[in-house]
Each structure stands twice: as C-alpha cells, then as structure tokens.
Length: 171
Image (tube, rainbow, N blue to C red):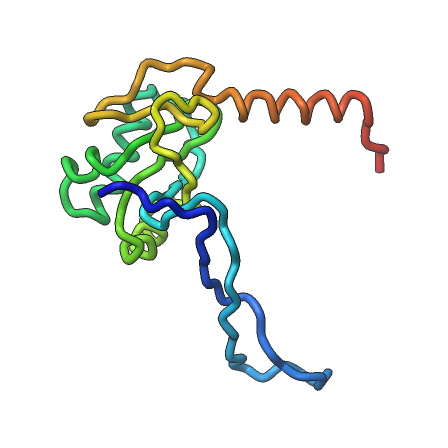
C-alpha cells in the first residue's frame, strides 16, 4: 500500500477542559474536550517509538534485537516486527520507526521500556538522509554512517555553540 499523499494529518488529543469561569475547587472528575492538533507529513501508519535509555552500553545488535522483541510483544511474531521496522537509532538516542496500524499504538505505549510513541513523518525515500536513524531493510540494519544522523548532529553542535557564546548565569 502506497503512503497517502497528505500534507497535514489531524490527531485528536484530550488536553483541554471547559470549566467555565468558576474559580472554585476543580471537581473530582472533569470531562475533557477533544481538540485537534495538526501534525505535518504523517500518515498515522508510521510511528516513532522512543525507548528508555539503557543503563549500560550494549552492542548495536543487542539494541536492535531489543527493538524487535519489544515490537513483537505487540504484533505477536518477531518476523512481523522485523518487517514492520524501517529505521533504528542506536548511537545518539534509543528509538525505532515502524509501520503498524494506529489501533496498536496504545498497546505499544504500554510495553516495558517504551517512553513515547509519536506519529512519524518518514517519507519512505531511502535516499533521504535527513530523516534520522539508520535504515532497517529486510530485517537488517544498514551499516552505521553519521549521515543518517546529520540533522541530529547539527542540532547538537548548534546547541553547544549557543551555550559557549551565551553562557548561563550561575545561580
């Protein structure tokens, strides 16, 4: 199935409540209203799963194996997890991209060591090196190359240069 040509996707999140102008103590249960948020470039079939940082420094294959096992908990079969994952990050942060139906996202969010699951704007273009993360194709991760993290590395360098040119005041 080809990705939908969508410039904007609407994601509904519960984050506001209508309490009126009453400044009294909030009721125990407050009904939240649904408010749409626009997320550019997503199709809600591709998800970015951010994992908790590991306490030690595992080998790259161990990290990727943990991603496969985590996703397999939601999908039921490791082979399906391997087919679903399209990118992994193993050096600067712990995360992977996967293509799964939206109704599995809540299940993935509840898995051990999963920090966040976010809509992903992955373009599917293997030549797009600005995306971030190493490509994961046919159940195998591409050899590591800094080009897969060029945007992240540039942002870190920009942050460091701002810190050196504008030092924070000591408290």
